[in-house]
Amino acid sequence: MTVSGKKQTMGFEVPSMGENGVVTALLRRGGSPEDATASSEATTKRPGTPSKGSNGDEPSTVPTPGRSSGKARQSINIKAELEKRQGGKPLLNLVVIGHVDAGKSTLMGHLLYLLGNVNKRTMHKYEQESKKAGKASFAYAWVLDETGEERDRGVTMDVGMTKFETNSKVVTLMDAPGHKDFIPNMITGAAQADVAVLVVDASRGEFEAGFEAGGQTREHALLVRSLGVTQLAVAVNKMDQVNWQQERFQDITSKLGHFLKQAGFKDSDVFYIPTSGLSGENLTARSSVSELTSWFSGPSLLEQIDGFKAPQRSIDKPFRLCVSDVFKDQGSGFCVTGKIEAGYIQTGDRILAMPPNETCTVKGITMHDEALDWAAAGDHVSLTVTGMDIIKINVGCVFCDPKEPVKVCTRFRARVLLFNIEVPITQGFPVLLHYQTVSEPATIRKLISVLHKSSGEVLKKKPKCLSKGMNAIVEVQTQRPVSLELYKDYKELGRFMLRYVGSTIAAGVVTEIKE
Image (cartoon, rainbow, N blue to C red; front, side, top):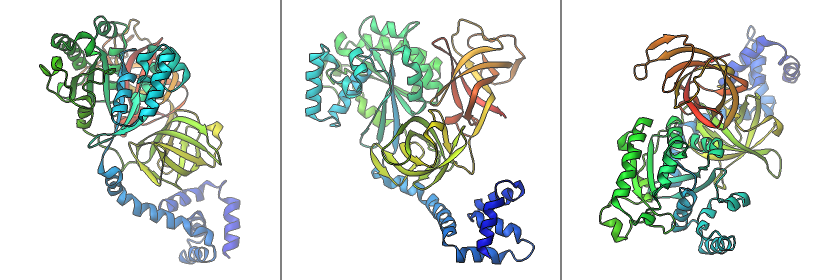
């Protein structure tokens, strides 16, 4: 009996929609599709028997309920497992930002070297090579700038990723490019971060160049704030070039402090640390230079990173992962890398990729080159997936839980805050939408209302144009479908940036998704 039942299911499951409703309902409870159709046929007679029979005769259907009950067992332990992992150290995603040539890569490369993450032999090799290339001062930057082009030009271009441990945290370090041609890459890095280190150059004329109009210090600080980073350490770098003068340090902190407050950082969440990336002063240990210790007694950069508060992770929400890279691996299937924004995943899970709307199976999970059985929100992972074509997946897809998929749309409404823009925004204005790891061409379809900055009440309906500093509700239309979530459901997945001709013009949060 059951065999024929199975044949029938194969025959009519797909076309008829009526049964599918039943199927999905039952699947949620952890049955198998055979049970579902069998019982929907036999609901009138005796619902118990067919499903029993099918489970008895057909070993192939047994694992399904087994696995889902395993999932249920697992989901209770996930928090306990997280605490056990890494010796109970919480995870922190840190992005390093700042104007081009402020010394971000050198600072972080030297920090990693002092922590012992780079061995002496490799460091010696970098020193020799950089001397040969006539760039002796770039030796530490080469720890993070690995590609030939980045080394030739002496500029970081892509986001370099490494990890290191402090006394109480495991830190994933992302070294973002400072050059304004590579801001899209920098947005991708900042969208995956929890906290940031803003590096500014203390030497005369350099800080001003980075901070005044056209410098990247302001734009980067605005970007990370809009992407949800609230805690910021400001590393005032190259202090040895101004002989560790206290008034230069205070001059910089007062200018920056005023600006960061406007950008929306709380004073209590911004910390200033005088450092020197090249000589390694005040990076991992408090400095012993008498010119500095005479007036500065605060923590070193590493102590400050260690002192950041780890954010709450949304582990209990449905699984979401934004793809930041796709590549073919040896063996079957291919790899996608990205940060898990919500939920958790185990090997063997079925996951759904949106917008292509294809499901696949997770064969393996690796994080920082270690194979894992599971990973949870906040982790940067590589998943090896099988069962779908690599052509269908591109950067910016979202992998999600098939039972609760992410929403896909081409039109959505959002509340945006406009930065300093020269051109007023009118209906039909073309923009680039930067969202997680995607940049999509889009247009502003409708201007719906202008809002009061703090209270959010409507000041004016259907405005003709929007100018700088305004807070407004607009409707955005993208050329291709994008996967979005409402800001109120998923903070991480509801934020986006709008850019126009190479400068960031607005930050926004998704308020309503149009089908």
